[in-house]
Image (cartoon, rainbow, N blue to C red):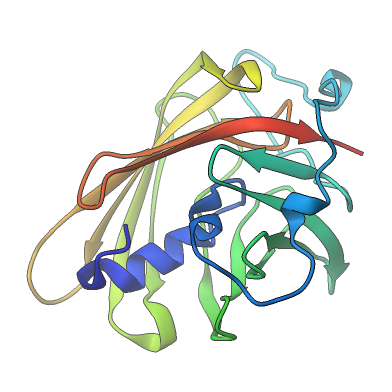
Length: 220
């Protein structure tokens, strides 16, 4: 995912809701990191907040300030709310700004201070979620370079085992291709669990193959 050729789309994908700690693999600016703030162990999922009617999730559970997810590679914490956006801070110092209940990413500030606004928002989620749902949107590259067609398909609702435990999760496949230029396609698979309000597993089997999964979490 760090290949220069796919820099724009990779950085856009890093903004995804969170839980995917791709950014956690790189060194960040000095100062406290989320990894030092995540307490050890797991907080039991608040199942009452996650109604699943016939395998359908109408709205995503809203993260709360202080929610923290530690992954095998990196960690991320909800550090605040700003203008009705949820602010996630990665252990690298990067931040993403997302809409509650839909987790659409509207802004990302990377470790170098590069500030990217996604217009329209990067829709890695599009509630309601149910198996076979599919949506497509056009996403800008970093700093306005190129644009990409992104298609997301909900392929399954299944149990997935990760270091943090076993969770019921929506398996989603995101496919990206450029709107102009040389035709290529890259796909990534992620498993979102409403129980922990985030993604619990991620796989990129294409160029720059990459895997990550939830190690522990703390919910407020």
